Length: 131
Image (cartoon, rainbow, N blue to C red):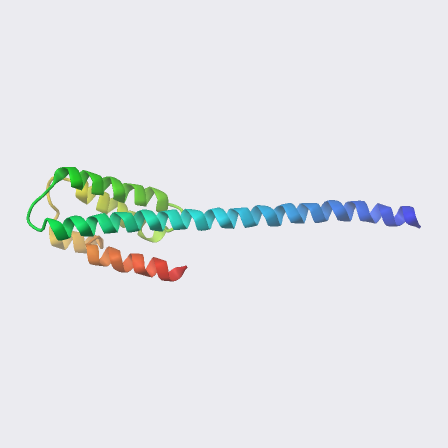
């Protein structure tokens, strides 16, 4: 009788071990996804803050060095967001291109693409609210 019970216990222990590893893996994966989302949101916030600072401080003048930096910040935000907050990733790429281009896009084009600062800030607030 004991041998029969031991015959059941060993496979059950192996099955339990498999389930525990699976649960641990899923927990790690969820933690990584949350970390990726947080880092993406932080990158978007950085790009938004720097853009707001630049726009507010130089309303009629252009500083190409700062604009190159803004382009880089928006590109970084797009890269970090590619899996965790895909909903605004295309806009971030457009925003990066906007700052990279020497020729200014018209206000109409900016609004059509949904990359004006007010729209981007609203989308960011919506993303924060989703958490």
